[in-house]
Length: 555
Image (cartoon, rainbow, N blue to C red; front, side, top):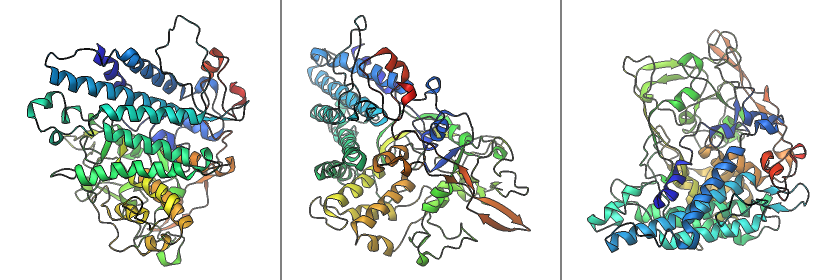
């Protein structure tokens, strides 16, 4: 029962990307448009979210319930002082691991709350975080919490990460536990639970946001430095420790269907034999729901096969043939017009995407299960699944909360702010070299990337251009993972940067020759605030709780 105080927290974490913490969150960004007009995050994006339709209040409740559990464990060190195993050595392994997990989980859920609900107060005008809760709350007494400052929240999360690190093994791997008998209570059996390297990754994420323009108006470089330093610790662990036989390899493609992928820093418990993501992304004609359409803005972010952005004349981009010779990642992330969808990418033809407006079965507006932008999603789709097969093959899916790629991107962005793109002396790795990992790694489909990359060398000569470059690469690498919403907000300083229309492609078929119109608006964005609202029910319940600016009707 004492262990369950910690274990239950993992059950509270999402398991796939098909929710408002995953791909649905991208509907409120310039990467995607929801097919459903009533979906809550789409309403957020167009300024019609109501207090009775708040999709985020459930996360407030979930996170504080989880914090309550670990606070019960941590109170007066009661969890650490519990005897779990009669053998002293094994009892020590369990006690230290659980104590570390409790601190790490408290950091995790406080950070989740801060990222979602931190913002400028509607009355005070101060940058506020969330109420820090470090003790079990007596629900029989009046509860009237106020929000800590944003800085106070960051410092507490960092402190909990450091406390966790002192108790936890660096990672849950069998090869790090030389005594085979100990592997009942340590090692790979605990894969998916918090470990030491995960706390470094959490710290990198926290510092990266705290260092960003919205939360760092004085540009305190020390914050960028801490973001880079902690990301580098994760990078080094993967390259120097986890790089064992059958382990991590920075050139290997990300496998979205392997719940034990060495790419993972921390992930959800996997869902076996699932077709949820395929149903979500495939068009209605292929028995999907076509629930998500990628925007033209996202498609335009993908460079050409020579690495140059499509806006650069050297890219050889042809708007009359816009999907020819694009960055290899494009073909593993986006389903585009007239693409032949083949089993396992090379096998039998399963389906052809027809997005033209004069008779294409998958075109926007033809039916309710067609996306609104004429771009469907391939990322996270298992290409061995065909519902027309006599024997349907489904596979495992898991949500990778933090992965190798995220840490490389964190490092490149932060290190560039501290020492520029080319300096490798401070961290033992330059921001440019970090991005070479990204630009030379195989795609999700196993295709090779750039053999040479003159554009990377060019932008590495200018920190400002390199920063824009890293932002674009981050957009490509993390699309549909629910991260861009928070990236856009930490980078932006005005609402105008968020309230930009997103576009679709309108396609006409002229006897097999296609013409493309990229100017049609898919959706206008009307955010009233750069921040998410504190749940209205909590505002009503606690008079000290200050709402975020822009949510005048929610106070």
